[in-house]
Image 1 (tube, rainbow over the protein chains, first blue to last red):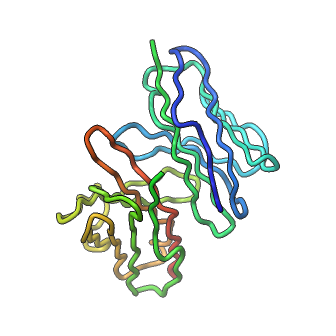
Image 2: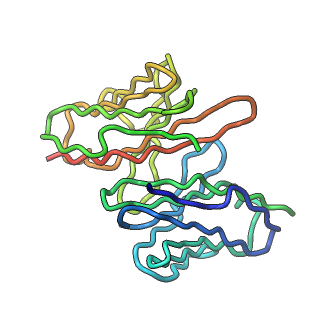
Length: 109
Length: 117
């Protein structure tokens, strides 16, 4: 079966760095998304990786290793507004989106 | 986690025809279902929010007469794209939310890929 695993919840301190991991087992791979979702709002796009390596975008970076079925989202200089759920999603060979359950990130002062 | 299914997974249709997409919560009752549209490498764009038994609330810029939403039960919502045109080709994703006490979580479907010729 197809599966995406990410931690249910993480806690970090304001100003620190946090890494949210995502491992996937899917039938084929056509890209991986990271989304941020604040409670009661629609998810917002953070990154899209289809090739191996690190993509940096401001305070957020996303890494992909296709051979390992692994990705992580790195958040630097954490701010209180970064408290949200972070969703990992993979597009499989049929171009279907397979969603992770999301990681709830709690930022403490 | 809870499972949300969509049917069909993909559909190709001729311009001018209507297409119905179903969204089902398989093992839970969803008080609210959301319909999103996704363009390549972009955020999900919320189209509408529907609560069971009431009319859907559409986001600004979304034509309610073109995108008909019916939320007939706590486990089923349908989106009908009427008189589809090539610019309607997109990935349509639904999600379902459970609201019980203080448990408020949203589960996403696998999406429906619509191609209008």
